[in-house]
Image (cartoon, rainbow, N blue to C red; front, side, top):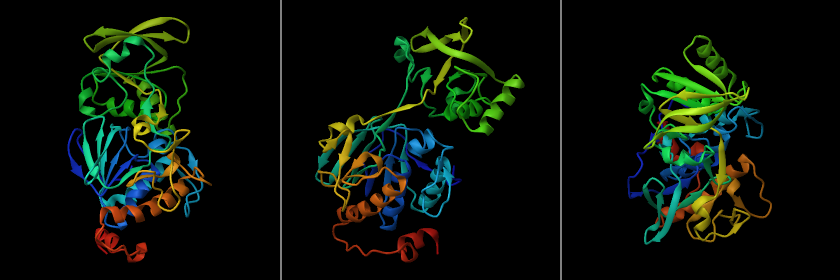
Length: 351
């Protein structure tokens, strides 16, 4: 990830006024920040994940991408890192681990409330949520919900919360291995559980995990969790069915689950927008929906000739920002500038 620190807001704050609220911090949402920044618009981004990049970085960080102009090939994570460096001069504010939930029309435009109680206000709402919100795949045990956000977690919001704990991590992708590596130095002990002895993660991470296991600093169990033991929201052990059909109990007081993500449109489906097969219909001039000031760009929008490509989303973000400017600054005249002559960009870069 880029060395530039992200401006991450605490949940449950507001109301906050913004020139543009972007729902989704994937590549298209990130590029919208750049185009908005060129027009002096400040952006807040909301994402259900705990980091930027969306599906591109979360599910396919090592997947090669070949159709970004001027870049013959890059991975999903490399593209995300590059976009973060590109928008760094405009200092966007991120609201992670939150879902856009309630939207209401107000005199100043729109008021949006997230699942964590954060309240944002703007004349421009941009839906760049790909196929919808990413929702973690949860443990299939019926009693799992009683432990969620107390001792069972689907994301890490604060690393220090796991200091000195016996942490159990289940999953075999990048998220599972990354957090195993990050938590191993501060936890009392880390045990990684996966249904097979092969991982779907970066080779460097896999090598580091094997190194820690061989050194006796971490355990790996091949199997699947089938029982949760504990009370009052606190786990004390999990039951594991191993590949040889034997069953064991493993002591632990924190369980991290990384089984991947599913995509759901979520509360956006109830916002009164024209939907077609869970996609949002827009025009091709402004990429505006049937509601004034609400736009949709990227994979979540549909129109005649639509192609689900990242570069198409970049084009959509560019035209969207031209209209959003008029809503944000109704008394100003928009003068189109190339990046070579953008006063906003030059000022931010100090050139």
